[in-house]
Image (cartoon, rainbow, N blue to C red; front, side, top):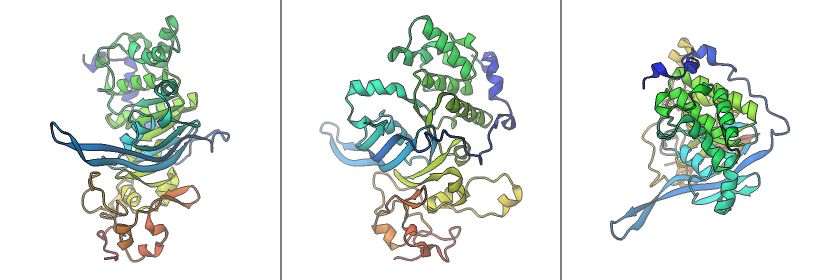
Length: 381
């Protein structure tokens, strides 16, 4: 069915971006002081390696794809932690491993004092109502054989949170909350547009009354005019329900708009993590510098004169990552130590974590123009 018969509230999904922006991205979202430093999710040395087999009859493991290779970071209660990086860096795999859709190869994921990686299936099922996910593709993540009402009601039934007319009432309330007309509760996903389908996915995630939601690139498949509206909806829901987000995206401008802190990944490793504004004003990792230099600035004069940092070469394969710092093959500041020694992910400044040898040897930045330099041009070999 065409979008012409879709929900009349879709007008909110085609409104101008000027009308959809409700918060200055430079203004941090207010947090409850009591929750500001309370860790809700603690990730320690998280690894997700996928085995590669050879042979048809006698399968033999010959290698491993190191999609996530030892991440350690905290997510505070009530915050939005943005996770960014190039395609293939392991962002989505990290999100799925955190909420145990993938069983991690190694490491710990501690949620409210419980290590999810060590819980028996029954206990993990009990906690799943507190851990939900919004998927990237609103077209593929909804069952086409189920009505919208059944899709949203499913978590309530699985976790036995309501029954009968109570489920119907809560489903209609959730549809109204996310901006969908409750009258269309019996419609199927194909009768809705992309923005509406993502709202259905958000309503489904809210149905179990979770505390923590992993949003896996929830806006990348949507039109630009709709993206800001979905982010603002998530902002409003966070304030209303006290949610904590891990917001995964490759769009730094979008992440800056919604996130309190931002983490940058490269080839399965954490490169940098700090407050969102601090990351933009004072990036310490060369990879972060390059990413920020690629973000368009809405000022033609500035955009015309500034120089981008163009990284040389391709992203290495996670099947055979480089020795030492995994970024050294593309880093304009790289020196010999970068090839031999993996940098420690450490707190370089207050609340500002980075994995880079330049923190110990800042003089290596002198006389190096990252817009013109090539990897290992600053010495070492």
